[in-house]
Length: 133
Image 1 (cartoon, rainbow, N blue to C red):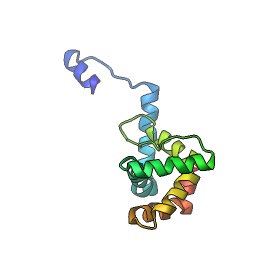
Image 2 (cartoon, one colour):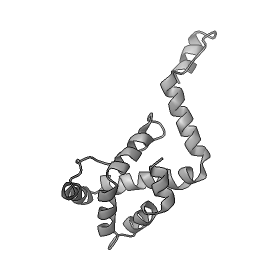
Image 3 (cartoon, rainbow, N blue to C red):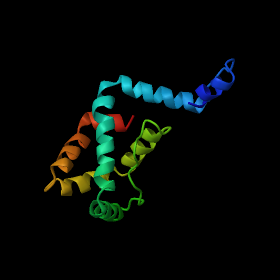
């Protein structure tokens, strides 16, 4: 990173990450240490984001369901390891929209196996418990 580049000009440089960066690294590393979060939760959270983002029709139906349920119109967020606390934003967006996502996936699952898989994952106790942490 930047510290390595600066160390090339000044070998005595001591690099210290800011507290926010250290927190983001700690959260990321902690998530990687939990098998379920690493192997199921994070990949499925990303798949859910892509499921809606890559389809204008699904996004429009999702917005209609949000409106019917009286939820604020918000989008699902992408969780990226390279973005500070993006996993938190992605989890909050899913948490706030959980009823709309479940109804939407239930409708989509009738003709889409990806939606059926995401719905099964989202309705599992382990997923709901992880989301509510």
